[in-house]
Length: 350
Image (cartoon, rainbow, N blue to C red; front, side, top):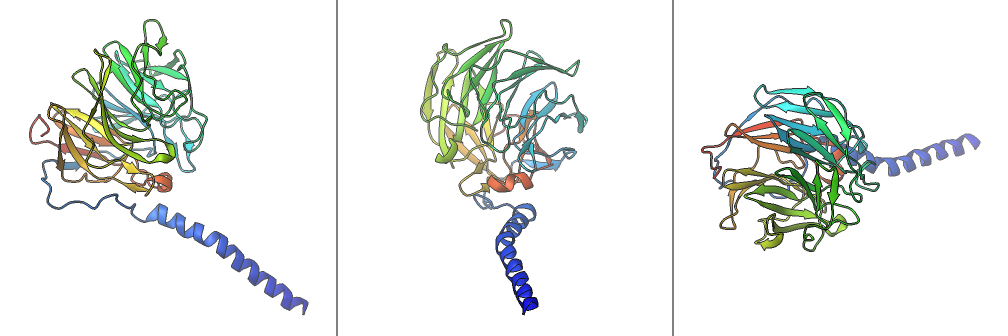
């Protein structure tokens, strides 16, 4: 009788463990090994104007890294690895040599930070310094000197900020959008005085947003989409005139999304990839926006749907590196090690 009870107890325990662990195991198999869902199936009737080839794969794939382009290289800073843990890994892709070079690690493990090239140096600002996308957000900032491969601290941000946009304005740095307590404020950093100005520029229009696509074109900063925590993705296009200190709302994007990549190519802006957190799906769309006419043109899908990657226009080519193929909870299992090189038919990118 006692043996029978022991056996029954063991069976019940095994069943209970299966009920609890089973779904998690199957979910992990889904996230780690099955192709991530696309937000939109690839269209078959779009013009194929870009021919793609592959470059040298990333040695350290990761998600939510920060990217900047300087002197023929794409720099990749931080990000997170499996377990949503931030990393200090820092490397660059030499586009001429098709080669990756490991650099001095970041002073702090970060993901969703800002990385901006200005005056021959790289400026690293803010970011999340904890797992996933919860607080704490960082106020720290550093400058990287490529010839000496060293990092130096600079003045801290006025308040925590992560998942923001940062662009170079001649001799200054402009930080806008992102996740933080003053997310609609535009901050300007002056390297000569090592100081931040928080009152000089007009607030970002409502709604606040993080993870927008960003491009600087003809003295204007273009913000494409983004999201705000639990409220979902946005499809608006807002344009900031730097000299006039004014905002203008343009027509909406073809599809709302966040973490898309915007890249100026001649007189147009290419918008590529992205994700939708709510559906945990990835965008493979490749669209061209004309700033003069406020019109969109859709091209054939990217060779690999992904988001949060680095991009450059170099030698009449589009160069896309890293990012993540999986969105939402899949992201930590489905980083991309791809380097895709797209040959354009002409320098105008159209």
